[in-house]
Image (tube, rainbow, N blue to C red; front, side, top):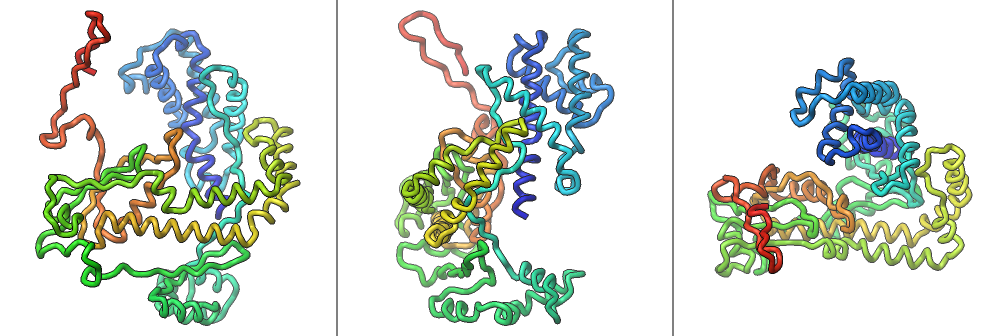
Length: 455
């Protein structure tokens, strides 16, 4: 399953973005496009990619759809037609779906090999494209997998255990889940953990995580009721009125920024006292998330432990790159990895690394819980308008990776979350929803020349 996921991310996610970069690289070598502005080059690249992806015979039928493009000269038309034909022959089955990756994953390798070869030849250029690996690369760290009641049902059925409900219909799975406690107690040792969970006021949700060596039992502690919270907690809303907040999507420098749009909600954040400001904002920075989730501590510990084994650290650092188009160079990478795999797995699979990974998982869940409580205040009636920007903070160079989709999913479990479209939100006024005027720019220095009136 992990290999299928890596293949899907490695091929399907970046397939057309790499194809567009390859088309731009080919177009810049042509005289017709060499002196064009980047916007027109991007339009021509999308035109060629659309013609190849839709398997169109007469590509010039698409030209009227691109209003900014004019018919090129005859020799340029022939060159573009040649690019489209070449791509249609090598790109593999389109569109790239889970079914095509499952049945014919090797059909995409010839096109990726050609793209990677051209990228290697263009590395001396100032705007050289980034190299990539044709195949997904495995990690030296052991991966944890989650076994739930559904997974246990399939495992017992595959092992031939008698009296297991049938997998032919959903009825068997529902019957298994209804009696999941008896099945877990019969074939696992979770009875002792369930007793400990009751003593610690935690409940066993019939999920375990394992890396093939150790097993970690997942226990959950429910949210405290509003009536049992301390005086710092916000009071419940009156009947017929809900707390309202608006949470905007993750910014590049902060994990999230939330704005409260209810006077009662703003008062609750101040311990029930009257809030003087009209809007109250909440925010978590990326550094705060890194600290709360234990990411910084885990990285520091991992670097400390690997530094005590200089031979292994040097071997991992000197690993030949896998971002090559030559099979001989890729074999060097494979041989080097296989030569040091046993030592790397022994190092990253020892007890202290497993405990560190499990500790990091606990800290990350605690950080999620703290964020959700900060936003919702422990009240399930809180309304959150989540900015549906769909970008990841890890995409921005220089910023640490932060959760976006997972945070949206966690919030949905503790309050009412509604996705809000962010299209043109920077251009339109938040009050009247009309386009805002540009801001006048100051003069440039002491000269009489002025910058453009609007930007």
